[in-house]
Image (tube, rainbow, N blue to C red):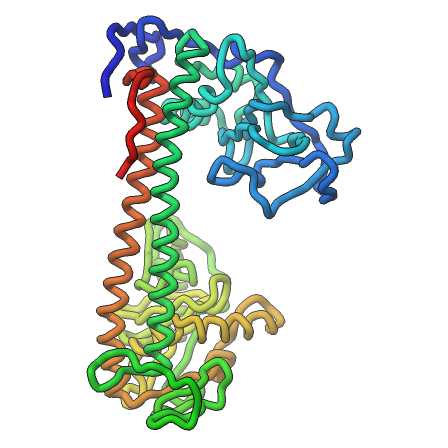
Length: 459
C-alpha cells in the first residue's frame, strides 16, 4: 500500500508524522455538544416498547448490542439520554474502561447508562465512523495506558476524554473514503475470524465426541473406535444399566470409583497465613487437564505450615487429581515426585494399578458423560462443590486393564492432533486480530494512503 506524497510532524510523539494536509484535533473540538454522562438508573424493566437502556455489559465483541442483555427505561426517564445515529459511547470505569460503542443502524429508541459517556459529533468537522475506527487503533490504546499511568485508578472521565488527541484528514470526504475502506477490510477479517472460530468449535465437539466414544466403547480389532449398536441384543455388547452410558462392550464392568481406588485424600481444610517468601500452596486454579500450571503469583505459606499440610497427605506420582470446588472436574495425573501442598479444592486418588490406569480415568473424567454426572452432583449439594464421598461413589466403567492402556495410546494420538489444529487456528485468529488493529492504526494516522485502494479479498 502506498504512502501519501508529503508528511509533517504531528507534534504528538505517539502519533508521529501525518500527511501534510491532515491535522490533529482534541475530541472536545469535534463534538456538536459537550460530552454527556448517562442515566443513573437501575436496570429493572424489560419492556420492548420502551427505549433500550444501553450499559457496558451490552457491548458485544462484534461491535453490536448483545441480544441476551436487553433492559429498558420508561420513556420519560429515558428522554434526556436518548441517543441519535452516530453517537459514540465511551466506557468510563471498570474492567472495560475505554471501550467504545458506536450507536448506528439501531431500530428503535435507546438511551445510555451512567458509566458511559456520549460523544455527539459535529458532522461538518468529522465522521463518527472515522472516530470510531480511531478508537480501535493502537494509538488510542497507548493514550489509554498513558492516562492510567497518571492516575491511581483506572477511570477515564469526560475531562480526560475531552483531551483525547485524534489525527484525521481535514475533509469529510477523505474521512469517509478511509472509513469505507476499513469497513470492507475489517469485514473480511472478521469473516475469516468467524470461520476459524466455528472450525475451532467443531474441532472441540469432535474431540469431546471421540473421548466419549473411546471411554465407553473401546477399540475394535483394527484399533479403530468401536461403533455402538443401534439396539440390543448385539454380539459383543451388553446393556450397562446406566442410562447415560448406554451399551458397553462385553467384558467391561460398571462400578464406582471406590472399587478401583486404594486411597483418596483432599487438600488442607485449614487456614494459613500467607508469607512473601515460602512454599507454594496450590488449589483448583492450578489444576488443568494438560497438567499443573504454577505461576509466580501463587499463595505462599511458611515451611512450618507446609510440613503440617503435607504430613497429613499429599499426592504421590501417578495419583489422579480432580478439582472439586470452584471449577469442578478438571483433572490431571500428578507427575511430580516431590510433595506439594494443596487446598481442599483438589482431591487426589491413588488407583489400584492392577485394575485402573490413572491416564485412562483422566480422560474418562474429562468426558462429557462424567462431567455431566459431576455437575448434577454439585447442583444437589448443600455447598457448591463435590466431596470425596461423592467422587468415590460415582459411576465408572472398568475395561480390562490392557484395553485401558490401548485406549489411552489411541486417545493420546487423536487428542494431540485435535489440539494442534485447535491451537493453530487460535494462533491464526490472534494474528488476524493483530493485523486488523495494525491496519486500522496505519490508516487512521495516515501512514498509508487508502483513498484509491482497490478492495481485494483477504485469503
